[in-house]
Length: 258
Ligand SMILES: [Zn+2]
Ligand SMILES: [Zn+2]
Image (tube, rainbow, N blue to C red; front, top):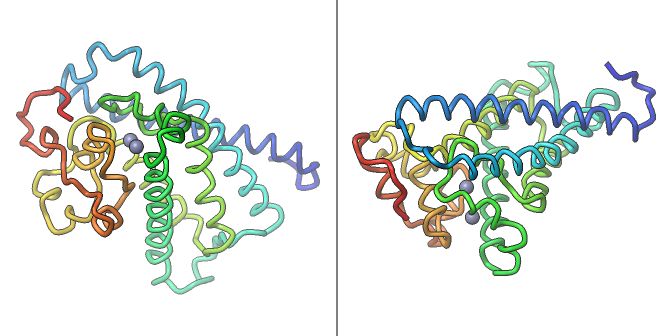
């Protein structure tokens, strides 16, 4: 491990590089897992899309660096200086706070994403500059989850690193938040509905975003801006429901319907 008295700039570079490699690995493992599942569940869905997938991987590698650096700096400040609200003692806060902290993090992340995402669609210049890269994935694949322009990556990469300075969270619960972010990020772009049809049409599915909801955003653009929950979309009148193709039963044909 890096000695605690290392000059902070050298330490930031080292932990930033290490964390970037971890973010890239997390991306590769999760995307490869769901690409493999896609090959089994929907053979041929990504056929002929090698160029798109190569571009998604290239953009995701740059995004991994942008996500990794602030995460590494926060890790350093927590590990050696105790500056954050991260804790590891299970008794530091009441047990009921564990799930509450996860929900707070997810809601803040979701709200930030909704409004920054909507802002990027609200201006043609901003869209072309910062968000067009993500929408080059038409339709998205298991490799799209981190395919962002660097500007969009910065907006996404700062949320959790800022939150840990203000909202206490157990290290394991932070791991859970990151796991949810990873799995939902990949499954929302995978190009088919992983969740059972019964779930997406249930009262809970009415509020939770899955691939059926997000793929409609990739097809129609001006709607369905949320990340995890449909609350903001519903409250602001931007929810246009589910992708007709993905919300159909499993035997529906592969192919993109906007
Ligand atoms: Zn997307
Ligand atoms: Zn968008």
